[in-house]
Length: 185
Image (cartoon, rainbow, N blue to C red):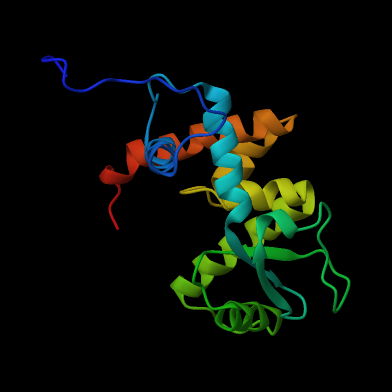
């Protein structure tokens, strides 16, 4: 280029190239303040990523479960089998049958192991978030590192509009990325 053998042509485009899109998606996932990319663009990418994510919903009452993309989840969520609104969002890859076994043990007042108690607590918090906030709760819990506690304490109460919801989710994801290396497993 310095010797004049190559020319540079600047082209304005409506969309990013697939390579640029991948780089921006990765940067928006991980990082803090991506230089040169408008916040609105980052929020749009975050929204698109979350809408394409699959989540598993589990009825804590009857055990009905389904896995679907976030974009197809209705605003108000209730079990199509029993009509209850006690729907938990499970973590990616989590077995809904195993999770429902814990719910059944709780209903029957059977003793739970420490691990099962923790899981039950997480499922009930998740169901509470879904009961109070509907699809917004599912959107929040579909983000990286946002569980029911973070969703209920930090994300959902502060989000009055859709844009505020995604801003809070972005901040929660950034906090997760910053603090995760210091967690003890």
